[in-house]
Length: 216
Ligand SMILES: Nc1ncnc2c1ncn2[C@@H]1O[C@H](COP(=O)(O)OP(=O)(O)OP(=O)(O)O)[C@@H](O)[C@H]1O
Ligand SMILES: [Mg+2]
Image (cartoon, rainbow, N blue to C red; front, side, top):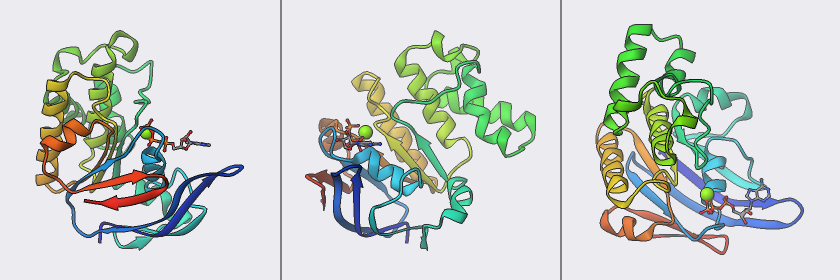
């Protein structure tokens, strides 16, 4: 089992209910869209999965295990996240940003360099390896955030609006890359409100609206 939500509610203080008894299961390492209008709770739902937020009530399990505060670091090592706001480190170059998770794992430097550069080529920013984030366009920064999220070959990729800052043809290319990654064994949950892009890919989707989740 990849993911299970059972009657999960999330209420932000003092009384803003974002999720209302949401239940669903994702059984295999597929490619899933998470859609719904701005403010519907897509980012919040992803935050629950990587334990940046705790549900107000209900049960969540990831990779067949109930979430456990003690095991947060262990869980996060298996999950790559593309944050909606990128969160690149400003004083590091593009390739050092992409390489950071591998460095933190103590991976051997020659592999760190070659693999992170290869991924930056893959997302189409191989020509900007030494630039710092403030020297890059929003779409370039976003693609570096994507490379960083997948550099450790996570079991699950949570991509929060990962093509919100690129043009339509780059977005389609990136969707194909996520699909390729999925075929190599990484489960993908991609949150987006760009429904015209979702329509072009025939993948299962979860749709959030008014606190409830529908699957289609
Ligand atoms: N930390 C927080 N505290 C209080 N309210 C929050 C917090 N984070 C999000 N919200 C509110 O919860 C709702 C859901 O936010 P969320 O960011 O999950 O939506 P979203 O579907 O990702 O939207 P978007 O498509 O604009 O990214 C919004 O109304 C937002 O204002
Ligand atoms: Mg969001």
